[in-house]
Length: 507
Image (tube, rainbow, N blue to C red; front, side, top):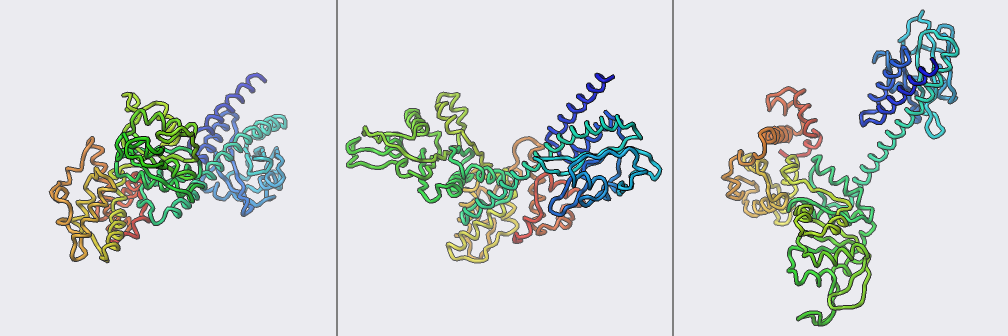
């Protein structure tokens, strides 16, 4: 019998560990733990309470065998009732019969007045301090059985404490990420990213995490997605912010000059080298070197770049002196470097050295909710430059802008708006001021991919436009679209849209 009980306990503990290790919500996990505990032990009810240290109040976090109304009544002060005594003292309590125990409050009202049950309550401790309690009811039992219950609950309480600590650590990391993101956004104004889409927020969070480090960053994405701005953001948020930020476009330089540009040259190194010249690595000493379109480098230059990244040393072209440099490298490419490695066009060792912290920049077609804020941003930017105020986009022109797939991404959108601002004579951006190819395009031309993907993009655009026109009023937007507010709310959650972001948009 003893062996059988131990096996049952081991099964219970194993199952509880699996539940707590899952990625689900902690409150749901704790309720499942209590259900499993009841199944394995025959306990009638189970409760996990946690202490709010700021207010000195103990509240139910999860419960089994208790209605939601009863759970809401389960609040205690330190020292109040059996739960309050256990949390205050840090010592377990066993009550053989709650009917004859004056400390037992039955505040939840979940037990009948004549219900003779035993009650076991043990503290949940984390790093030597009490953070809550685990308690359970069972039918009136002998003292030996209650002692066994207390021992088992104490083990379960230690597992719960670890799960709570993990949640607190997770929340702490999320708060730190938000803090870093806020700092980074503040540091990069006014040249900051524009938009509130989930894809952009994810990128900004990654940039905030990697900026304070010295790690090499590889920015991936199509042309015009903001890779240079991302590199600038990393530099601005790093300890190197007071040192040079040097940019090199590897695609813009011929192969014969790229090595000289990167590493410098000595007098007479080649025809036209009239004197010694520093390269970009020397110019960026102490700061950040941004290598744009790094996939365009020749294999011979890749070898030298790998040495600089590994050893932090190089020689000028035509020189013998080995020079050292303290430079952080941020690289970017619109090409598929992994495929280039497979094709023998890019060195595998260099790819791994650059790919320490990859960040993928989302194309504008995957950020449709950011199109309108970007339009507003560029209207203000070029309106201020040219001296035109109060610029507005007509609904017809905006429909064309929202439907366009933007293969050139943000750079293409900026050029379109700049051209329209130059051409307008009355402050209105009409379809006639947009590029001819955009004026002639049918909305269906922007639909590509599978049918479900295309329908989802149309649905997202319609909901985004309705929210903007109704300034974030969900009810009005739902009415305009002919759907219920409930469906509107479901769609907004699906597309991660926040009505607050639409309140400040101009109609």
